[in-house]
Length: 380
Image (tube, rainbow, N blue to C red; front, side, top):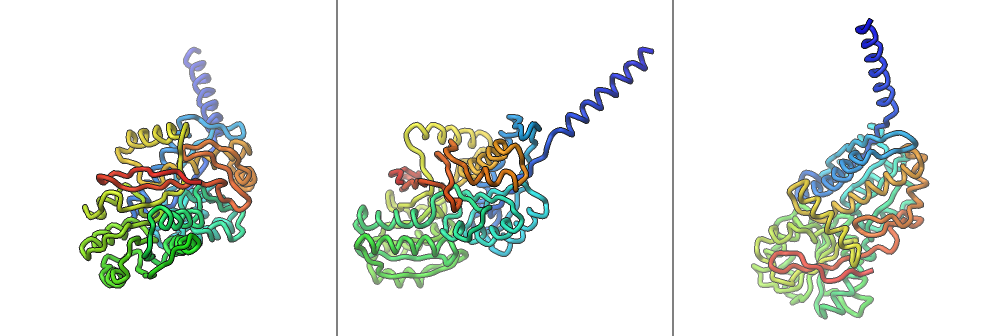
């Protein structure tokens, strides 16, 4: 009799456990970045930011619509290539993700945004800064960083007014990001009373810049602006030094990484590089960012490169909208996400405007001394 009673109790507990499990919900968050290729270190940094957010959310036991959510990260590699970007975007759509954080590059984020829009899946980029990303009228498209109009414009004004640039040249890698930020930089230089002495182009895969650097050397530049990523900027700085070009080297967030000194292989002079990162914290907000960086280092054994804090915030903003909407269904939480106002993230306060751009986006200007990145100022 006791054995039978134990069997009945055991069966009841199994049934209860199965019912409790059935009440849980699986929420799939997609992440896309270039985890292979020349800027794989940046793509992996982003992916770790997403993984950190997902792990913390699962540890908290987040409830959505009365059900405990189990978050799963579906991470994909787009190699910074637009075609691969749209292919993995479709793969995530087919996997029925509830939302996507990514892509890293503007050149992949822009074409992928149509794929997500057609499927009605919210996409938050932590790092795509080309203005076109949020100008296509897609209701599913958001970003948590300031765009190139702000970023390139701030650097252009700084080149003229703070660096007193007289002979300013631009080089870009012809990607959506590189070309876009270089054009905005040039506009701001001209608007500030400066002039662009020369404009040169390369690619995001190039390693030899002898021809274009020889061409700009004749202009005797005091400021060289590069629109592109650190994997190209580092070798370019090395070759500038070997050619005797002692100009200030400027760039956007694509070059503003912890890896740049290594990529330049000792060719960077203290204070030579001035770059801007989209986003910025100051005052009381700095403690939150410092804690994030310390926790990141403890968890992964690596320092933050650039964008992982923005990925972390993007995941949390998306989930906060799900919680508020009481649903992880994209159609139900998307309107709530669009109305995000005053979310306190590690990168600052996040609110979206009608285009999906972050409101009052900040920028942080940096330089490098002793191969360490040093903050110059936070600009809004």
